Every structure is written in structure tokens, then in C-alpha cells.
Length: 104
Image (cartoon, rainbow, N blue to C red; front, side):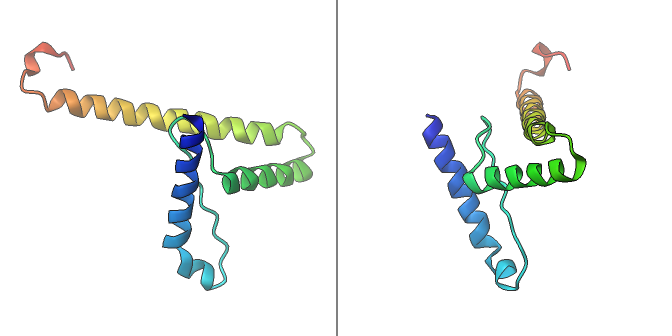
């Protein structure tokens, strides 16, 4: 199951690269960030954040900043997923015909 999710993240990154190909052709740097709901990041995203973490460590001198960066990304993904779930549940309840059974 995890392998399938990682493949989906890679496919998402490939679609983003294809979509913004003109931007890359014009000389700009483009890094697709592809993360799936259960957390896996595509390989280039993982390498990008690892390199970014190393640069933060080099500037700040705090060795744990790289792990902190990945923890922050994980928390942001969980926060986003909870918002999506909350909004989806609210919309589902609001569109039901038997509104009287639910307290809002």
C-alpha cells in the first residue's frame, strides 16, 4: 500500500513538472512539492527539504533544525488533512435532508 502511495506522489510531481515546464525552460528553478495524505513525499521533495535543512543548519549552527523542518512539514500536513476532513464532514451533514438529527 505504501509503495502505491509513493508512486502516486511521484506521478503528482511529474504532472506538476509538465505543467510548469515553460517556467523551467525560461531559466527559473522549479521544485514540485508532492505529498500524499498519509505523509509520503516524492523523492525530489525529500531531497529538496534535506538540502534546505542542511543549509539552515549551516547558517544557524543548530544541528536539529533539519529534523525540525521535517517535523513542521508533517504537522502542517496533518493540520491540512484535519481541516479538509472537518470541512467535508460539515458539508456532508449540511447537505443531508434530515437536518433535525444533527446539532451544528
